[in-house]
Length: 139
Image (tube, rainbow, N blue to C red):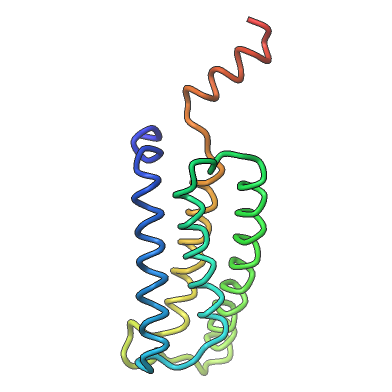
């Protein structure tokens, strides 16, 4: 299953870029309200998608940059998402209308997407891991 997911890595990158472009279009067209948290999250998703299309996506520098971008985007998404949980605890929470533009749901989705993209950039194929283990074992 992991090999199949890794073969689909470029497709996930293209989906992330398309999602970023669509979200920026919605923002710039004035359909959604201006949100600096959302802008950071969609930009990070797009940049991670571009990094997945690079031929050197497993290179240490690419992985380092993806971890840094992912950490930043994850912190922003978690901060925005925690604001929703704080409103729930205070009894002030209600979903926005329309529901698909609700910042609580979108920030949770962004956190999930950013984490997944970073993991896809960091994971190595089982064959490559087996080769690394054989080298370390001296066989």
